[in-house]
Length: 433
Image 1 (tube, helix red, strand yellow):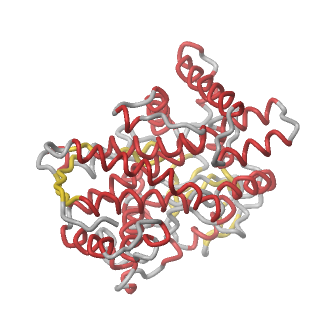
Image 2 (cartoon, helix red, strand yellow; image 1 turned 60 degrees about the vertical axis):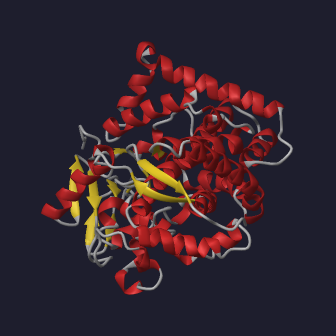
């Protein structure tokens, strides 16, 4: 199934409204909104495996595209070291430094509306570049996109149009005229790793652990390709999802002055601005959760393949070798799981838990063996930059058509891509923490 306007998640939602929980979206593909499907397809005991979509980067195989469960488990152990509690704590000064850079940009540009989708993208990519390659791409400092970001956006748009036809990508890759820019991008990735391998940073970063494991192994040609794939994963998965979540979060903040004031009151009361303190502000995490519920980073869902013998989901038997997925945008707005499902209500995660009828379907970072390895880092990034900005500024939506259509203009390019978001900032009085 394809979507010409890159609003596939909305089209799938309408199909489910018409035809129910099980909708055939291709010759051997089913979209499922039966709540039982979440655990059956993605949980630890699931017999489903990753589908053919995950061959997209072949011959490079990054961690999240590893379809063999045992191979994935082996590689995941290495990644888990880079995302341990101790490691995440060590990354915090890096995250804080880029959040501070973004604060300085806002202070500089107070006189006019600021496109925060642009700047949140720079923030997220600068952080992950530092943690992947040991250096920043200085997009915040220089105020412009790095070369690779334009290539990634082109790739993601192509994926959005063709993601239900993964077989077409190898054809595309073998046509030099069409693939020249992509090849240039992968050559750039290779060069980053050659430079990174020769210059270990003083402080270990995410890639330190992955590189250590690579150097201790056979260093086969496939291992090298996989290393490049892992670099792509850190940059893209670790940045694209964070930036679009920030844009949607700040759209809702700018639309709700009361929520902003409640958050500012709690942030003002802190004696230290760090992730330990911020993670204890229930309302802040609730605001993040509600953003992820209404605007999941992967709105159309994650593809899985049923085992050859088939599997039963709820009371429904699904034949073997069938592509299945739960469309998260639709599932997270299902009235069976959430009261007032289309309303942004952070209190459903704090003082009004009755508004959540089935929390088991809420899997913004996925669950099971393929759950997001970077969940804690992502939450740290979201909390820190949100707190830094709310501490110093009041906000409002800039009037005009751009913000009027912000929610409608986002694109489903596998990950959700946010439209421009124009915000007005004004300085507020606060006590220096």
